[in-house]
Image (cartoon, rainbow, N blue to C red):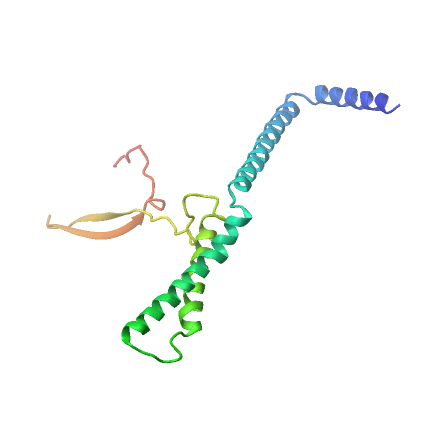
Length: 181
């Protein structure tokens, strides 16, 4: 029974399309093209996500990047501090300040790694993406308006006014010339 209902609906729909005329078929073909482009875009997005998942570092790589590298930098900071205190000849019991010598380099390295991670979309891109999208610079052109004023005596006086216009706001001129009376 459901197969017969589907056939009836299909016949009714095809009859309605034929009766509606060419406008309905044109809009339905435009809709089908839009639907096709939307499907292609979704497939492309899914493929892009798949590639990004494959490019993402493994768990060991992320562990070494976020824990191992900052720890190594913290120990390097402690070593440099210890060597500088030994070179100065200090035999004090507090040669190493843990916060200053280990935590500070550790945190700086961790912040740097997080910033690079954000810019490269989780270490999946080779080129960093800027944090702020700066607006594009519009070209400005100088426009000089000249007015020639003729006195009753026949003396000419020229007035010049300078103005700056952006390329987008520049008025368009008509190709036709104005007829003078």
